[in-house]
Image (cartoon, rainbow, N blue to C red; front, side, top):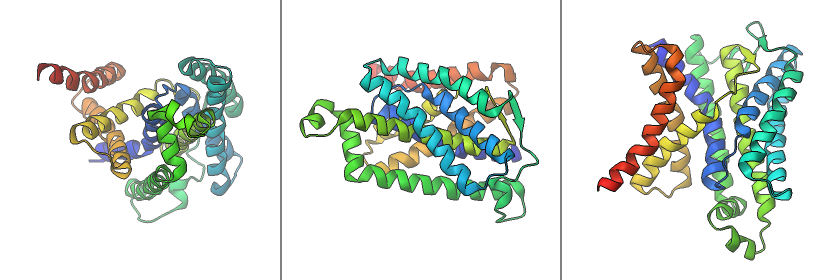
Length: 288
């Protein structure tokens, strides 16, 4: 039972990555690889500030700001320097490795003795269940904020930029600015996942972000398959499905390990799982 509870906790921690990928890839149609670096950035900023005894009300804004700056930098390189979005993300991600290592000061930083979000708030006595309650409240608040943002005039302009950039530009909207702000928001959410994961697992690692984009992508693809099949147009329901996708993705990995698959094969299984999610609906559609 604790095994699957851990998977649920991990899925909730990764909800920020899923939301970030949803904004960058599904709203703006930008394949943003900055995710790997901004996720680690959120984790190392959290770890470094915890070791310097900084309070939570300072750490959280600092993490969001750091992730937002990383995303904005990718957006500026893409829009102002006219560099392909994929390459812009790779360049920023590559540069962030050195920045993350400088902030962390070492390759791995243990935080087990440090006060964290999950130790500071005690709703119930059981540690895992207490963490679950905190994460549910935290993720719901983030979901409500994002949903509200996407329903505002600014959010509608963001969505229109991804759907029809020439049209929204003709209406006087600065699409370059929209992309920069959108990528900043997406990477701030990704850094938020790093903030949660580091405190939940008790350490920060310089390599924690390698390949992490596949978790967010898999979560969004799971949600998208349901959205397309049921023809869902509600922003709120779409966000809930993206969050559920992150949890389902973690449960699939947990089940894979629980049935005895070699942990060394976990990334291979993950790649096959994402491939099946992407490919099966299209194969089924062709046969139909």
